[in-house]
Image (cartoon, rainbow, N blue to C red; front, side):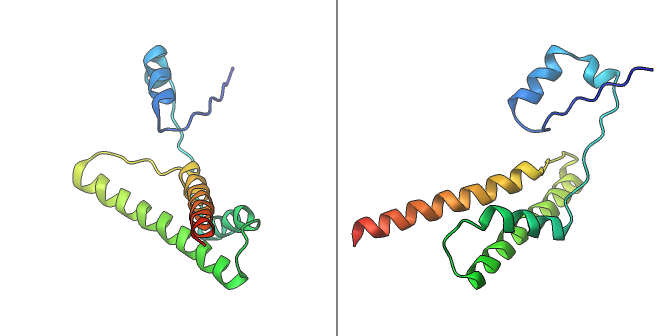
Length: 118
């Protein structure tokens, strides 16, 4: 028996294009979606990616809690969206990492703006 594992993020143009190019990926395969990240995993990832941000420890914990809350709230809204419309919104671990990355980028931009205005 030959088993092949392909890993694609379920969002974005690349996944959609691959499915169009290879329709048997949908018709002849089993799609196994990854499990959601638990709360402690969200905290650990946020801690790792926010450790280089220059903020006090209490503020860092608050930022971690904010990112976690946003992710969990979007997950809950995605469940509501599925119930109401029958359409799935995929919230992936990459979405969480992008949220943290966007926060860091925006923080750096705003700090630069304040520094320039000073």
